[in-house]
Image (cartoon, rainbow, N blue to C red):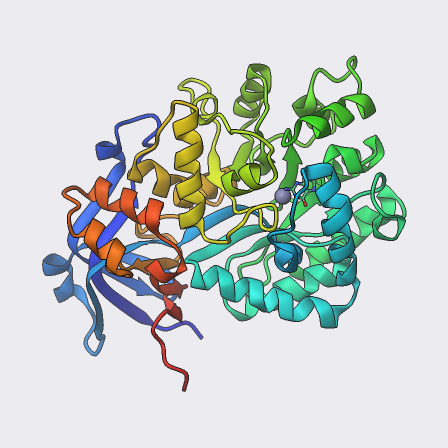
Length: 444
Ligand code: GUN
Ligand code: ZN
């Protein structure tokens, strides 16, 4: 039941090339008075209003967003929906934060009645923040996966998610009873959800510290046995975590953290590694050579005191690794990828790598989509892509209006939206050509 044709008029922005390898001007597509035409959930035309308006079928009303900016829906490459209620948990770094806050909360998701409203809240908050696709951790319980996909399918979203796999170093009640059982539980979830609506399943070993070698191998097998699924895990987030993993998987035979995953078949196109804060050059090279992706989660890396991501290493020419942005809620402090982009800028500034508005929005759209190998479907307004798009309001607040009305280039406009934007900036979110959120909608 997709709307046959939707047409919106406004300032269109998307990307045709990689601004980390070419100039931002080359990478940016900007149409000042643009028309975006969607049919059956897909973009069929994007270009100049004056040229395209005559091609509209009779009876189609153009929705006018004349002074607004229409962009591809934002794409998040890492978040934990089961942590929505423990955001802003005080005072700990990763190891203690997991023990004290995360595991007690995630253990509640064996109860579908607990999981459902949080899954609904998560999806609604994504849409309100302008995020149309996210790659998401559920809890260890299969019920937590059912709850999320039920909500995302109901909203027509292309959501990527999976059941957490762990068989050591976490509370016993949360551990999979064996790698074989974990394989079977995950395979059942893949059968139940992968390809239902726009759902994509992600095999989800939590991280090497909570997985035995046999569990990591089971994850690799699962991923290989189910083509089209993705893989997500955490890597090199916290210095003590890295030390603990090095003790469990010593050298030799494991050269480093990335090698632990590689030796269990977990590197490759469609694998997304969250954080990647403390990787060596060898590890970046292996990510590049295997086509693996990374999710940069700056609000989390700052909140948990994990460290400062090195974007310069990630995008080095000749060794480019696909990088997206992730909120990593609840390590992160906001689901908004605009606020995430703002923190990415500041972390870049501290590392001597400031990023302009084109680069920041690229990371939050094509960057994440490419890390997830979904860039042929989402993250762009190029015809043939799915019609997930957002409308940003440069006058959302008096302060933002004062800043953006003085912006003299599109890049500067995008930069101010990325640095100052939040959920208020998102006027509307469209999923598959249908309005899914409007900031100013009145209750009916
Ligand atoms: N490493 C293993 N589990 C987690 C988690 O839930 N959040 C973050 N930020 N890092 C992790
Ligand atoms: Zn995480």
